[in-house]
Length: 180
Image (tube, rainbow, N blue to C red):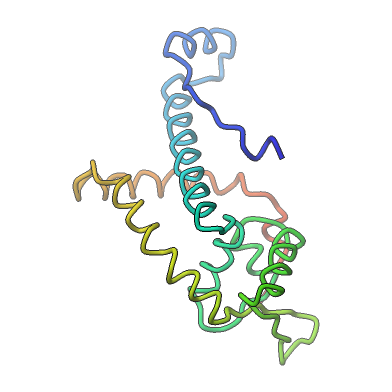
């Protein structure tokens, strides 16, 4: 889908922001500039990871599910995986179907509630994580290598604040799963 691959190649100039602020009085130039930098940086990082995974024959969706399952030893309900990935249950179910077919994950019936389907990581899925993660950690190190320890702590603190403040923007569909 075209929309999935659209990225902002160039940030608007400060002059452009000044002109927009005249047209739109609610616009705070500094806030807008910071927001666009965060958005553009996140997009670049996401696309870099997607390309790296594609070279290894792995989609971002599959990688995300493998990574989420790799956090926990116990199988996770499909709706909880969808919530954790920030997508709808049907979206994550479609990805999981292919992963089940390929022997990366398994569907497990919940012993306490037969309506709940849990997803467990199989050894083949863990092997993919074990093969992919070292190169992703090297990529992260390369991207962040220009920052010292204090700058890294500052980036973490500032982006954590932004992420928490942006939490209200999450779609309601991400909260569709009510698991105990």
